Amino acid sequence: MTMLKMIYFAYSLSQTWSMASYALAIQQKDKEFFKFQKKIIKTVSGSESGTSCKPLFHSLQKLALPSQYTLSLIKFSSHNVEIH
Image (cartoon, rainbow, N blue to C red; front, side):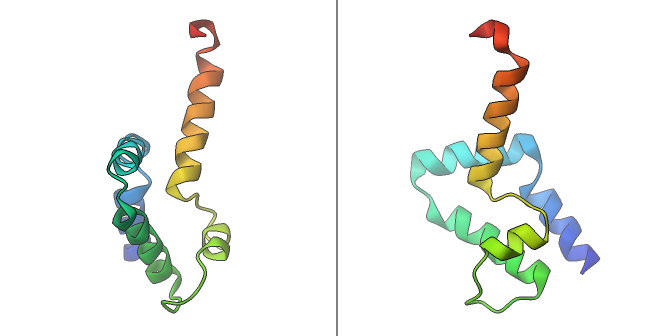
């Protein structure tokens, strides 16, 4: 379980990588990218394939990529108020 968590963090929670990947996935309308994140969450939590991911993200205290992207934009905006 610990190894799976480390793999998950390395793969999808690196802020720079995940934000760039999210933007690219939006441009390409790549739903497989988002499905892969859900698959990782289900594997880490030991859940069945038909389980809803929303409570899993909550219980693992993780954000889905769209939420990570939104949070990074809010942080960027709040730290760079003088740009606007």
